[in-house]
Image 1: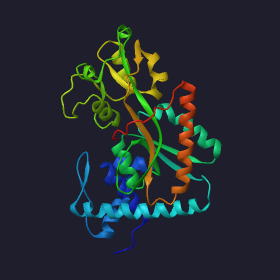
Image 2 (image 1 turned 135 degrees about the vertical axis):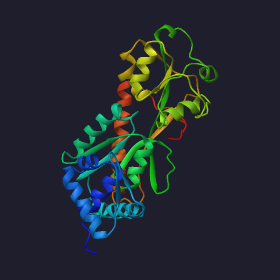
Image 3 (image 1 turned 90 degrees about the vertical axis):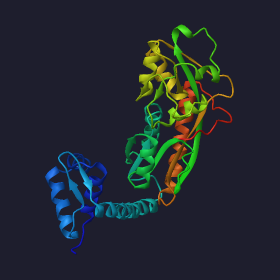
Image 4 (image 1 turned 90 degrees about the horizontal axis):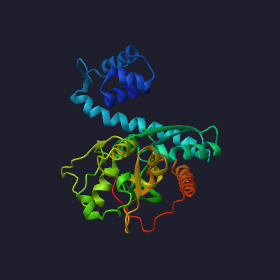
Length: 314
């Protein structure tokens, strides 16, 4: 068998992940024909097919399924060699790939990036905003250096660092502003608008209301907090949003925002990264920057860190 190239393995991993030549080529910043040529040469070198080609999608063959995890291990090991070299330089240098969940990114990410670039203007920050399960998988695959998520994730092989806690607030139509906030039991009987499945905030809201995740809900499964707030504004129901989102969202619709009686629902936000990452020391420094960014944002919003915040599962 002739030598396999690192480039071919990168292209194979992208195609295995996307299941589509066009999408894989775009992610690799090459043309689709060029990707096809590299994959065909890789299959010829191996003497067997890696993909079953369909009209709209490609799927891994049986051999491809066995080949894929080994390729990911190789790519991750090579990436960690580069990280080891970067770590030897001591400071925050080079590329930094950060994942962030959608209920944090719009509100905290601008401050984080501003503070990180103030420390090192040459830092190449790349951001990935998606749901917690995808971020954890991309961390494991070596496609992210770290992720900012709700804790705990309790995933083997990952280090977790808690950064700050914040409460959830109730958003109701403006017509209900004079009414006292409902109790947890009363909230269970209201039309509760939630983010779609996969968002950790959905699970945290259901947990606070003591509603089983598989219990039918007659409301709206939204893709963003902004959508939920807008729907509350037209009287469809009520929702819960994290404190950091209130200044950006509360004025966008005719709603009122109320605190629950103690103990208030809350979440703990933290950073996670691979235990084997050579950048662990640098990522610990970045965690401090994220913590300070959150403290500055909360101070500007006049918020206090809630004592004894509950650690809801992500």
